[in-house]
Length: 294
Image 1 (cartoon, rainbow, N blue to C red):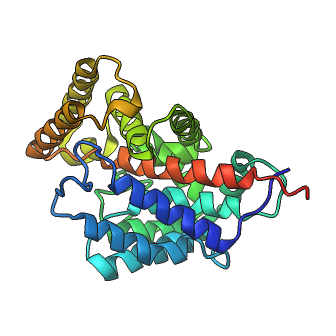
Image 2: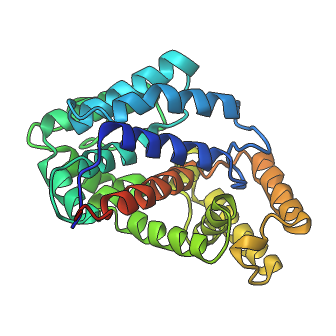
Image 3: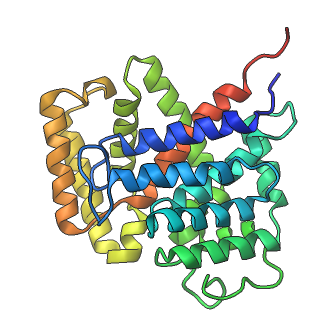
């Protein structure tokens, strides 16, 4: 059977996922080896600490968790460091705390289907405050206005899904994140460290599709250039397993790639958010599956 998780378990898993994400060498992002984009690792660590209590607060709706986490982050660091992470992790937390014997993925489907118009209003406010180039930029889903009266948060995400990786996860029941979580867990079992497993997953994902954060800020041309360059780095690694990414030669290759992306102003931030949520999902899924038969 599966079990519901307590608030402190969810908060601990969230903090651990956020800390791992920023301590993993993910080229183009802020990480322990290099800052960038006018942000530091300290900004991310502080953002994690102040947002965690809201993400795990089982007295709040999903939308209110997101808004309060974003507000707390801005009060602490004065900029958008974790909007995508918060958007993805709040419904996962709500799913993990459900008193049900269902699997985490099935619990999440119930959470997503229950999102209402007030959740949409709260999230629109959070995104407008974070100002990350917008969840919606057209006349039906612009977050600088109120959501259409009949829309739930899931409706808003479905409308944005074709142009936003995070919204697409909502629209597909977090299918990509659950697949990533399984891959990450398998790489850990193969002997890779958590940092190397996540870096390996990130590189492969970066080579597979353009990052929508880069598209919003710089257009599809640069996003495609980053994608192609990531494929080139993978070719240079020549099938290296995850546990080999921390060798001096491979780490130097990734650091060089990181500096190259930052010189272009390219920050694959949407993909980084998905990586954090994937680790969070892996931890929650393992905890939810814990047997309680005794």
